[in-house]
Length: 116
Length: 204
Image (cartoon, rainbow over all chains, first blue to last red; front, side, top):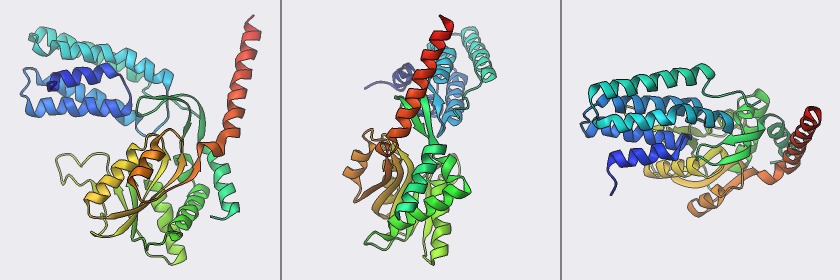
């Protein structure tokens, strides 16, 4: 049976779409609440980022182009965050900062678009 | 549903809700079209037509229905529209909606205005693709002790969700399916093709 960490890694690997982003947020919160992670900030950020995009994409038409762009901007950073889960504080801090920068870039270009 | 109502609501859905273009759906699949039914259900004209059409379908059921509900947000404006139409017809009906997730760290309510146990209820939704929203609403309504006697949706995109709902619910009534919008889809796709050809000609 996969561990919560493995499940989360698999979920991030599946990519960015609403149902899966919700799963990523749920798994991240589960680890944060129940697994006593060494660096809880990682899981709070994973949950927040995926939740934020879920909210932006929920029940609205999302162009495949925008979905692909946002995934390209953020997915590698979410994977890097998870890879840093057992790292030292400097490594974690760098991964968190890089994720924040990528998120800032993603929201500056918009998380969705007008499909009219 | 009268022929005039069927035609008027179909036209409005085709004109306002149907979007053609590459879209990523919530289940991760891709499509070249999307129905944003809120553009219809949240308009005065659309709400009126939807209220009439859905209540007609409800009143055509053999059981007396006590409540209608569905998963937020798709179902919300439909429920409101049906409530208003029910009042105009002198029909007593309650509405409820099912949250996607329980309220965090509070009451953890999943259903707002939950019907009484044993109530006959109808689940409504705007669009069916994989059927997940409807199936979740059925599951929650049944867990609350309700009898789900029918599911009524505005548009079934014919991507398998309808079959899953049929397997789970006593009755499934999609007011329209993708087939009702084939002509508009073909027209849009042809227009896109023509503009692509034109842009190739201009660039060469």
